[in-house]
Image (cartoon, rainbow, N blue to C red; front, side, top):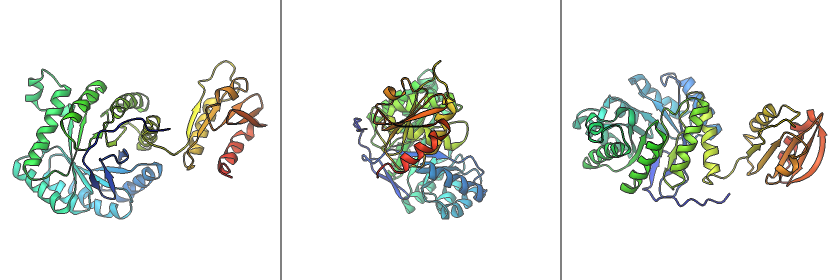
Length: 355
Protein backbone atom coordinates (compact mmCIF):
# COMPACT_ATOMS: atom_id res chain seq x y z
CA UNK A 1 0.00 0.00 0.00
CA UNK A 2 1.34 3.42 -0.94
CA UNK A 3 1.46 6.03 1.79
CA UNK A 4 -0.88 8.86 0.78
CA UNK A 5 -0.67 10.72 4.10
CA UNK A 6 1.35 13.94 4.04
CA UNK A 7 2.98 14.01 7.46
CA UNK A 8 3.59 17.25 9.30
CA UNK A 9 7.27 18.06 9.73
CA UNK A 10 8.54 17.99 13.28
CA UNK A 11 11.93 18.33 14.94
CA UNK A 12 14.28 15.38 14.82
CA UNK A 13 14.83 13.83 18.26
CA UNK A 14 17.20 10.95 19.04
CA UNK A 15 16.00 8.38 21.61
CA UNK A 16 18.67 5.78 22.25
CA UNK A 17 19.25 4.02 18.93
CA UNK A 18 16.06 5.40 17.36
CA UNK A 19 15.23 8.74 15.76
CA UNK A 20 11.75 10.28 15.59
CA UNK A 21 10.36 13.37 13.91
CA UNK A 22 11.40 14.95 10.60
CA UNK A 23 9.54 12.35 8.49
CA UNK A 24 11.09 9.33 10.23
CA UNK A 25 8.66 6.37 10.52
CA UNK A 26 5.99 6.48 13.22
CA UNK A 27 7.33 4.21 15.97
CA UNK A 28 5.36 1.85 18.19
CA UNK A 29 5.63 2.16 21.97
CA UNK A 30 4.31 0.13 24.85
CA UNK A 31 4.74 0.04 28.62
CA UNK A 32 5.72 -2.82 30.87
CA UNK A 33 3.28 -3.93 33.57
CA UNK A 34 5.84 -5.86 35.60
CA UNK A 35 7.44 -4.37 38.74
CA UNK A 36 10.47 -2.58 37.29
CA UNK A 37 12.43 -3.62 40.37
CA UNK A 38 12.08 -7.22 39.16
CA UNK A 39 14.76 -7.18 36.47
CA UNK A 40 14.18 -10.76 35.29
CA UNK A 41 10.44 -10.35 34.71
CA UNK A 42 10.80 -6.90 33.19
CA UNK A 43 13.53 -7.96 30.77
CA UNK A 44 11.51 -11.02 29.72
CA UNK A 45 8.48 -8.89 28.95
CA UNK A 46 10.49 -6.29 27.03
CA UNK A 47 12.10 -9.02 24.93
CA UNK A 48 8.65 -10.47 24.13
CA UNK A 49 7.36 -7.03 23.16
CA UNK A 50 10.43 -6.35 21.03
CA UNK A 51 9.95 -9.62 19.15
CA UNK A 52 6.32 -8.63 18.51
CA UNK A 53 7.34 -5.25 17.03
CA UNK A 54 7.65 -2.81 19.94
CA UNK A 55 10.24 -0.13 19.12
CA UNK A 56 10.32 1.98 22.30
CA UNK A 57 9.49 0.73 25.80
CA UNK A 58 8.44 2.68 28.89
CA UNK A 59 8.88 1.49 32.46
CA UNK A 60 7.35 2.92 35.61
CA UNK A 61 9.93 4.24 38.07
CA UNK A 62 8.10 4.70 41.39
CA UNK A 63 11.07 3.89 43.66
CA UNK A 64 14.83 4.38 43.79
CA UNK A 65 15.20 0.61 43.50
CA UNK A 66 13.31 0.77 40.19
CA UNK A 67 15.55 3.57 38.94
CA UNK A 68 18.65 1.55 39.80
CA UNK A 69 17.20 -1.56 38.13
CA UNK A 70 17.21 0.23 34.77
CA UNK A 71 20.97 -0.26 34.54
CA UNK A 72 20.63 -4.06 34.52
CA UNK A 73 17.54 -3.99 32.32
CA UNK A 74 19.35 -1.90 29.70
CA UNK A 75 22.06 -4.53 29.36
CA UNK A 76 19.54 -7.13 28.21
CA UNK A 77 17.35 -5.17 25.76
CA UNK A 78 17.84 -3.70 22.30
CA UNK A 79 15.21 -0.93 22.14
CA UNK A 80 15.20 2.52 23.80
CA UNK A 81 13.95 2.64 27.38
CA UNK A 82 11.80 5.49 28.70
CA UNK A 83 11.53 6.07 32.46
CA UNK A 84 8.08 7.15 33.62
CA UNK A 85 8.42 9.55 36.56
CA UNK A 86 5.82 11.13 38.81
CA UNK A 87 6.43 13.63 41.63
CA UNK A 88 9.99 12.84 42.76
CA UNK A 89 12.63 14.72 40.77
CA UNK A 90 15.36 12.56 42.34
CA UNK A 91 13.93 9.50 40.59
CA UNK A 92 14.16 11.29 37.23
CA UNK A 93 17.83 12.09 37.81
CA UNK A 94 18.58 8.58 39.07
CA UNK A 95 16.81 7.01 36.08
CA UNK A 96 19.03 8.99 33.71
CA UNK A 97 22.13 8.08 35.70
CA UNK A 98 21.20 4.41 35.36
CA UNK A 99 20.68 4.41 31.60
CA UNK A 100 17.21 5.73 30.67
CA UNK A 101 17.17 6.88 27.04
CA UNK A 102 14.29 9.28 27.68
CA UNK A 103 12.28 10.36 30.68
CA UNK A 104 8.57 11.11 30.87
CA UNK A 105 7.63 13.83 33.36
CA UNK A 106 4.92 16.37 34.03
CA UNK A 107 6.86 19.42 35.27
CA UNK A 108 3.73 20.49 37.13
CA UNK A 109 4.03 17.60 39.59
CA UNK A 110 7.83 17.59 39.88
CA UNK A 111 7.79 20.56 42.25
CA UNK A 112 9.69 23.83 42.52
CA UNK A 113 11.62 25.36 39.64
CA UNK A 114 14.97 24.46 41.18
CA UNK A 115 13.92 20.78 41.15
CA UNK A 116 12.80 21.02 37.54
CA UNK A 117 16.10 22.74 36.73
CA UNK A 118 18.03 19.89 38.37
CA UNK A 119 16.23 17.39 36.10
CA UNK A 120 16.87 19.57 33.04
CA UNK A 121 20.56 19.89 33.88
CA UNK A 122 20.90 16.11 34.20
CA UNK A 123 19.12 15.58 30.87
CA UNK A 124 21.19 18.25 29.15
CA UNK A 125 24.45 16.72 30.40
CA UNK A 126 23.51 13.34 28.89
CA UNK A 127 21.55 14.68 25.87
CA UNK A 128 18.51 12.72 27.01
CA UNK A 129 15.13 13.85 25.61
CA UNK A 130 12.27 14.67 27.92
CA UNK A 131 8.70 13.72 27.12
CA UNK A 132 6.36 16.33 28.56
CA UNK A 133 3.17 14.45 29.39
CA UNK A 134 -0.19 16.06 30.11
CA UNK A 135 -3.32 14.04 30.85
CA UNK A 136 -6.92 15.25 30.87
CA UNK A 137 -7.40 13.58 34.24
CA UNK A 138 -4.86 15.85 35.89
CA UNK A 139 -5.53 19.18 34.17
CA UNK A 140 -4.78 22.15 36.43
CA UNK A 141 -7.72 23.60 38.35
CA UNK A 142 -7.20 27.10 36.94
CA UNK A 143 -7.38 25.79 33.35
CA UNK A 144 -10.53 23.78 34.12
CA UNK A 145 -12.08 27.00 35.46
CA UNK A 146 -10.79 29.12 32.56
CA UNK A 147 -12.29 26.80 29.91
CA UNK A 148 -15.34 25.79 31.99
CA UNK A 149 -14.31 22.16 32.13
CA UNK A 150 -11.66 19.84 30.73
CA UNK A 151 -11.22 20.81 27.09
CA UNK A 152 -8.83 20.32 24.18
CA UNK A 153 -7.84 23.97 24.46
CA UNK A 154 -7.00 23.52 28.14
CA UNK A 155 -4.88 20.44 27.42
CA UNK A 156 -2.90 22.29 24.77
CA UNK A 157 -2.35 25.33 26.98
CA UNK A 158 -1.22 23.11 29.84
CA UNK A 159 1.25 21.21 27.66
CA UNK A 160 2.72 24.35 26.09
CA UNK A 161 3.04 25.99 29.51
CA UNK A 162 5.19 23.05 30.62
CA UNK A 163 7.22 23.19 27.42
CA UNK A 164 7.86 26.91 27.91
CA UNK A 165 9.11 26.29 31.46
CA UNK A 166 11.71 23.85 30.13
CA UNK A 167 12.61 26.11 27.21
CA UNK A 168 13.27 28.99 29.60
CA UNK A 169 15.65 26.69 31.44
CA UNK A 170 17.62 26.26 28.23
CA UNK A 171 16.46 22.88 26.93
CA UNK A 172 14.56 22.00 23.76
CA UNK A 173 15.21 18.26 23.39
CA UNK A 174 11.54 17.54 23.95
CA UNK A 175 8.65 15.30 22.93
CA UNK A 176 5.05 16.21 23.82
CA UNK A 177 2.13 13.96 24.70
CA UNK A 178 -1.39 15.17 25.40
CA UNK A 179 -3.76 12.36 26.21
CA UNK A 180 -7.41 11.97 27.06
CA UNK A 181 -9.83 9.06 27.36
CA UNK A 182 -12.29 11.24 25.41
CA UNK A 183 -11.50 10.35 21.80
CA UNK A 184 -12.83 13.49 20.12
CA UNK A 185 -11.22 15.77 22.71
CA UNK A 186 -7.92 14.00 22.13
CA UNK A 187 -8.23 14.39 18.35
CA UNK A 188 -9.04 18.09 18.65
CA UNK A 189 -6.16 18.67 21.06
CA UNK A 190 -3.70 17.15 18.61
CA UNK A 191 -5.07 19.23 15.76
CA UNK A 192 -4.59 22.38 17.83
CA UNK A 193 -1.11 21.62 19.15
CA UNK A 194 0.18 20.54 15.75
CA UNK A 195 -0.48 24.10 14.56
CA UNK A 196 1.35 25.65 17.52
CA UNK A 197 4.58 23.65 17.80
CA UNK A 198 6.98 21.53 15.78
CA UNK A 199 8.05 19.27 18.65
CA UNK A 200 7.44 15.55 17.94
CA UNK A 201 4.17 14.23 19.33
CA UNK A 202 3.58 10.92 21.08
CA UNK A 203 -0.02 9.96 20.36
CA UNK A 204 -2.44 7.74 22.24
CA UNK A 205 -5.90 7.51 23.74
CA UNK A 206 -5.27 7.10 27.45
CA UNK A 207 -7.29 4.76 29.66
CA UNK A 208 -9.02 3.55 26.50
CA UNK A 209 -10.29 0.38 28.13
CA UNK A 210 -10.35 -3.37 27.66
CA UNK A 211 -9.37 -5.24 24.51
CA UNK A 212 -12.62 -4.59 22.63
CA UNK A 213 -13.49 -1.03 23.64
CA UNK A 214 -9.84 0.01 23.89
CA UNK A 215 -9.06 -1.18 20.38
CA UNK A 216 -12.10 0.55 18.90
CA UNK A 217 -11.41 3.86 20.65
CA UNK A 218 -7.71 3.71 19.83
CA UNK A 219 -8.30 2.83 16.18
CA UNK A 220 -10.75 5.69 15.78
CA UNK A 221 -8.68 8.25 17.65
CA UNK A 222 -5.28 7.30 16.28
CA UNK A 223 -6.74 6.91 12.81
CA UNK A 224 -8.14 10.45 12.83
CA UNK A 225 -4.93 11.93 14.25
CA UNK A 226 -2.42 10.00 12.15
CA UNK A 227 -4.64 10.41 9.10
CA UNK A 228 -3.95 14.15 9.26
CA UNK A 229 -0.21 13.57 9.29
CA UNK A 230 0.06 14.23 13.03
CA UNK A 231 2.12 12.00 15.31
CA UNK A 232 5.63 10.59 15.52
CA UNK A 233 5.19 7.72 18.00
CA UNK A 234 2.06 5.88 19.15
CA UNK A 235 0.82 3.68 21.93
CA UNK A 236 -2.41 1.71 21.93
CA UNK A 237 -3.24 1.71 25.65
CA UNK A 238 -5.17 -1.42 26.58
CA UNK A 239 -6.18 -3.01 29.86
CA UNK A 240 -4.55 -6.36 29.28
CA UNK A 241 -1.47 -8.02 27.86
CA UNK A 242 0.86 -5.36 26.36
CA UNK A 243 1.48 -7.73 23.43
CA UNK A 244 -2.04 -6.91 22.26
CA UNK A 245 -1.04 -3.23 22.12
CA UNK A 246 1.71 -4.03 19.62
CA UNK A 247 -0.56 -6.14 17.41
CA UNK A 248 -3.14 -3.37 17.28
CA UNK A 249 -0.60 -0.61 16.66
CA UNK A 250 0.89 -2.50 13.72
CA UNK A 251 -2.54 -3.01 12.16
CA UNK A 252 -3.44 0.68 12.59
CA UNK A 253 -0.21 1.84 10.96
CA UNK A 254 -0.47 -0.68 8.14
CA UNK A 255 -4.12 0.19 7.47
CA UNK A 256 -3.19 3.87 7.15
CA UNK A 257 -0.32 3.07 4.81
CA UNK A 258 2.21 4.29 7.37
CA UNK A 259 3.85 0.89 7.75
CA UNK A 260 4.74 -1.79 5.22
CA UNK A 261 5.71 -5.39 5.76
CA UNK A 262 4.12 -8.23 7.62
CA UNK A 263 1.22 -10.39 6.54
CA UNK A 264 -2.26 -8.89 6.68
CA UNK A 265 -5.01 -11.41 7.36
CA UNK A 266 -8.52 -10.70 6.08
CA UNK A 267 -11.45 -13.00 6.77
CA UNK A 268 -15.16 -13.11 6.03
CA UNK A 269 -17.67 -12.45 8.83
CA UNK A 270 -19.28 -15.92 8.58
CA UNK A 271 -22.82 -16.69 7.48
CA UNK A 272 -25.23 -19.60 7.23
CA UNK A 273 -23.13 -21.17 4.45
CA UNK A 274 -20.12 -21.53 6.73
CA UNK A 275 -19.46 -25.17 7.39
CA UNK A 276 -16.13 -24.98 9.18
CA UNK A 277 -14.97 -23.36 12.42
CA UNK A 278 -13.97 -20.16 10.63
CA UNK A 279 -13.37 -18.12 13.77
CA UNK A 280 -10.84 -20.61 15.09
CA UNK A 281 -9.28 -21.01 11.64
CA UNK A 282 -8.82 -17.25 11.15
CA UNK A 283 -7.22 -16.90 14.58
CA UNK A 284 -4.88 -19.82 13.90
CA UNK A 285 -3.83 -18.28 10.59
CA UNK A 286 -3.20 -14.90 12.20
CA UNK A 287 -1.01 -16.50 14.88
CA UNK A 288 0.77 -18.69 12.33
CA UNK A 289 1.80 -15.84 10.01
CA UNK A 290 2.74 -13.26 12.65
CA UNK A 291 6.49 -13.93 12.30
CA UNK A 292 6.68 -14.52 8.55
CA UNK A 293 8.56 -11.57 6.96
CA UNK A 294 6.43 -11.24 3.84
CA UNK A 295 4.42 -8.26 2.63
CA UNK A 296 1.27 -10.15 1.66
CA UNK A 297 -2.47 -10.24 2.13
CA UNK A 298 -3.89 -13.62 3.20
CA UNK A 299 -7.64 -14.29 2.98
CA UNK A 300 -9.48 -16.80 5.16
CA UNK A 301 -12.90 -17.60 3.76
CA UNK A 302 -15.66 -19.75 5.21
CA UNK A 303 -17.08 -21.46 2.13
CA UNK A 304 -16.03 -22.66 -1.30
CA UNK A 305 -19.01 -20.89 -2.94
CA UNK A 306 -17.93 -17.27 -2.60
CA UNK A 307 -14.45 -17.85 -1.21
CA UNK A 308 -12.49 -17.63 -4.46
CA UNK A 309 -14.27 -14.45 -5.53
CA UNK A 310 -13.99 -12.75 -2.17
CA UNK A 311 -10.29 -13.63 -1.97
CA UNK A 312 -9.43 -12.01 -5.32
CA UNK A 313 -7.78 -8.99 -3.72
CA UNK A 314 -5.56 -11.19 -1.57
CA UNK A 315 -2.25 -12.68 -2.65
CA UNK A 316 -3.21 -16.07 -1.26
CA UNK A 317 -6.22 -17.44 0.54
CA UNK A 318 -7.95 -20.48 1.89
CA UNK A 319 -11.61 -21.41 1.77
CA UNK A 320 -13.21 -24.17 3.78
CA UNK A 321 -15.89 -26.64 2.78
CA UNK A 322 -17.29 -29.92 4.11
CA UNK A 323 -14.22 -32.04 4.78
CA UNK A 324 -12.17 -30.17 2.20
CA UNK A 325 -10.67 -26.79 1.48
CA UNK A 326 -9.24 -24.71 -1.32
CA UNK A 327 -5.93 -22.92 -1.66
CA UNK A 328 -6.49 -19.78 -3.73
CA UNK A 329 -3.67 -17.79 -5.35
CA UNK A 330 -4.33 -14.40 -6.90
CA UNK A 331 -8.04 -15.08 -7.05
CA UNK A 332 -7.73 -18.44 -8.81
CA UNK A 333 -8.18 -21.89 -7.28
CA UNK A 334 -4.70 -23.36 -6.96
CA UNK A 335 -5.38 -26.70 -5.31
CA UNK A 336 -7.92 -28.67 -3.27
CA UNK A 337 -6.85 -30.29 0.01
CA UNK A 338 -8.44 -32.14 2.90
CA UNK A 339 -9.88 -29.86 5.57
CA UNK A 340 -7.41 -31.06 8.20
CA UNK A 341 -4.51 -30.25 5.82
CA UNK A 342 -5.61 -26.70 5.06
CA UNK A 343 -3.37 -24.90 7.56
CA UNK A 344 -0.33 -26.99 6.72
CA UNK A 345 -0.87 -26.41 3.01
CA UNK A 346 -1.11 -22.65 3.53
CA UNK A 347 2.03 -22.71 5.70
CA UNK A 348 3.92 -24.57 2.97
CA UNK A 349 2.88 -22.10 0.27
CA UNK A 350 3.93 -19.12 2.38
CA UNK A 351 7.31 -20.59 3.23
CA UNK A 352 7.95 -21.23 -0.48
CA UNK A 353 6.32 -18.02 -1.70
CA UNK A 354 9.36 -16.49 -3.39
CA UNK A 355 10.54 -19.68 -5.08
